Every structure is written in C-alpha cells, then in structure tokens.
Length: 346
Image 1 (cartoon, rainbow, N blue to C red):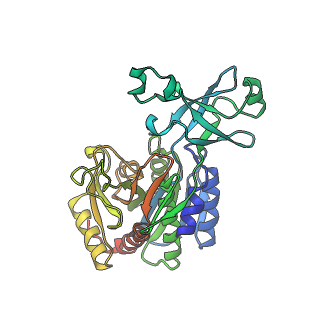
Image 2: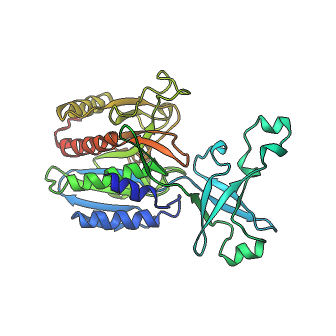
Image 3: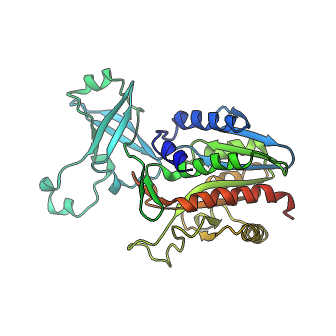
C-alpha cells in the first residue's frame, strides 16, 4: 500500500490531464484480473464477477494550475484548476508540463517591497507568476509553453513518525492506492459484479463519476476519497471531529446536505458491517466538501451511495498528511461493503 501511495503521489495528473495515473491504474487493475476499458472522458473502468453491480470510485485528478498568459519577459501568469487557496501558492516549486517537464517557482513581490497594507493581506493568485528562468516570451514559446499548459506542484513523498506520511495529491491518490489494494483483495469475488473506477475531473465538478455511473447503472456505489482531519492547533474537535489514526470516516452528509445524504438504513448497515469485521470507523457530516459519491448519487434516477473518507490534513496543498493505518482500513471497509451488499435490505 505504501509503495502504491508513493508512486501515485509523485505522479502528475491535474484535472483534464489524468493520463499518467490512468495508464498506471489501467495496467495494475488488468494485472489483478479485471476486465478494463476507458470511456470517452477517460474514466478507467474495471469489472469482475457477476450479480448486483457495486461501483467503487476514486478520482485520479489533482488540483493544479494552467498557464493563462506569458509576459514579454517570459514569466508565466496562471489560473487555478480546482479549489486551491492563494495563501499556499507563494514560492511553491512547480513543474510546467511543456514539450518536456520543466521546473519553476511561483513568485510574488518579496515582503521587503510591500507596503504595510499589502503585508497584512494574502497575495492573490492573479498577482503571482511562475518564474521558470526564461529570458523572454519567445523563449517560453519555443519550449512549448502556451495558454492552457498545465502546472503541478513539485512535491515528494516522505514517511513521518507515528505511521504518518506526507506527499502531494493524497487527494485522491490515497483513494487510488486503496482502490488498487481493494482490487487485490477481490481476487475472488462471487457476491456481486465489482466495478472499480478511476474517475476524471472530480476537482472541477464531479463530472467523471457522474458520467461513469450513468453508463454503469450501479445498484450501489462507494466513493473512496480523503476527508478533512482535525487535531491541529487551528481546528477544534467541535469543528472537525475526524482524527488521524482513528480509522476511515463514513461521510453521512456532504456540503450541508447539498451533496450526498445517506439514509438512516444505509448508515446503520454500514456501521454494522464495519463492526462485524472489527474495522474502526468514524462519522462525518461536512459543511462544504463533496466527493464522487454526490455525482453518482444523483445520476439517472438516483443511486444508493456512500463515501469512505481517509482522514487527511492540509488537503488541497502541496503537502498533505495521512495515517497509513487509516488508508489500509479504508480498503478493508470498502471490501466489507462490496462483499456484504448482497445482504443489504432496502
């Protein structure tokens, strides 16, 4: 699992350019005995078994940026793709996906040159730029850079004390790692048709999952994603009760009810299933966040769905932190729900 997480975290797949992760997921799922294909949008869809259709989705894209213009002096103006906060951008190292991958740094005016009122405010991304060392716009153009060229964070995976790990794009490469582990756990699946999906374009509207579900028509769906973890000095337990190391979180309500809303019956069944397998599980009701489960939940005439959240600190930043035990338990919980759905009474 740790090897999957490291490899996936260090891949680059901003929304709309998921190919690197998609190729890897496709090959790994095929190697585990699944029949795999890709749809028109690029979702990776793997099938095995017969019976009721249980879909497990995890998104392959990450928040990133794209070049919006090039200044005459060769600096790159950019737009954000996905929910990035301006405060985490300044001076981050990035990779520009031109003809060849190139390195750069997000620049802004140094504090020494700021007026007092500027110093007290977060610099907006519109005022920032990427410095890739070009002398002028023509040099950048010759390197293959143009409006729409993708930019991603240049971050690396590291393990920390207490079974923690940090890296880029754990949202949702942690889910991708759990999905691949789940595929291995489903070497023999007789209870249902397991349909494992690596989705595209989650960060900009849950589009891939909704379209995949429209074609699959699942009887039940699970989203594997990260979720907000508290336990830091600036986030109280009252605000975010989910903790690192206490197991995956069942996301019973998303976006204050504007996303997924699990039924009482489904929550009780998931809780009973987790308890029967001795899998620790937390509960979450979020105010703002949504996962692929919401996109699937409202597909066609509606789909019975849930979302398993892997607790993560510093989501949508160049470096996130998760607990590796939570990751493993998320895969175990997904397996229990996939295999146990045959006994679910609607």
